Image (tube, rainbow, N blue to C red; front, side, top):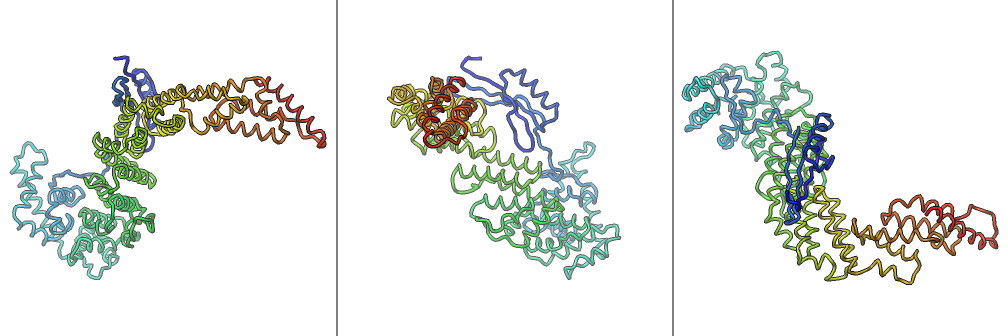
Length: 603
């Protein structure tokens, strides 16, 4: 490998929903061994290793995952999207997988007729309409026959088998027509009580509700008629029927559109939808950007909060995923605003404790959406809006902060170092175009922003070192430390000046800061330095001066001096005495002499 390439291995551990860097190792074998030990210890739900490479010649970073354990989320038991389950008996047709298959096979027809799979299965009028409408039923049967594998049967034989099953299901509906209860008065409890001891009570109650829905004109009306039946007093088997019907009605997109109403931006609609799914819709009532939420929708969200409607919750989760993935803009406020909105969504989803599966699923969708927004063209367009290279880097760091997904963050970060390395930008970064001292302050702010960003360790280090290099060049060009040293003022005043600059952020972390710190420490080691701080001050003034100096040291980031200053503060001033005013001058002189002695001890 070329000596111009730096490589290290980052070991990351997963707890909950986020990954954390656990260790950075130079050797691949050692990193793999350490990651294996961490995974076998079962302290993390996932462990992986990312190989990070930096090419000094072309300033390119490369990240590759070389080790991964336990990072995949489990699939939800309700997730049958896109799957067609062959139904070979009437019971197969009426279970959840069978109804899902009907939706997959006949979604367009069901949407056109404004019905659900359950309505098709429990009402002969809908079946006859399907049977007599072109080749829709034949097409569905043929697609199902192709989808399952029975090598001993031909496609035609499989189709005949499916038609035979359909005929049997039709006979079931016919034979139970006379026993279907009436819900004409809209009262469910008497019907439940009458069916409680009947073996096929689920079938009959479902058929009764389907008959009750026949007079409705719109899907939203149907949804309202079913939702009004929700009650904690109903037995679980009844809630299960209502859950199935509600989930199927929600598969028609227009139902949710009408329930939640219009929104100026799609991100507000997605947030409202997610709050509804998690049972937290009431949290949005009265918040800016959200219109009045109707009582029916709030009531449904309350039932979802109790986790009694798993099928409905799953359909809503799928709708949230679909809205995130939709090609339409999340909002109309530009790239950073869209990414910020996606980032805020994930934070909100986690705060609502939507569940591990839901969070993992939505996190993946949000990162995928972010990756479609983050590309070379969009990033180039963003930084092209700024002429100043410092503004360009700041814009990229703002973009990184809003970006989801480690690979997306790396894509953004890969644009930063080339900006810092371009010769035409050195004039700006080294302060040759303006006030160089002020540029040092800007470099410090930029470096702090870099260190606070969610970049890889290698990105942070390389960028921070480059910024420190610029600050060091400014320091060499301006000779600011030498100029302070030559000022006709005391050591203490020189120290205060340098510490003040350090506290106010004029020295980047690294060699630039180290030079300033070294000069301060040289001054502080001089004989009589502490004595000079309090020279001419009475006891109270000396205490205040030393405490202020200690505070300045802390703000400047000087470490390892607390004990020294505490000792000086306590021992360079005498204890309380009852001396009168005439003795104060002598006492102050004594303070100074003791202070000098103690300073020598501290040194």
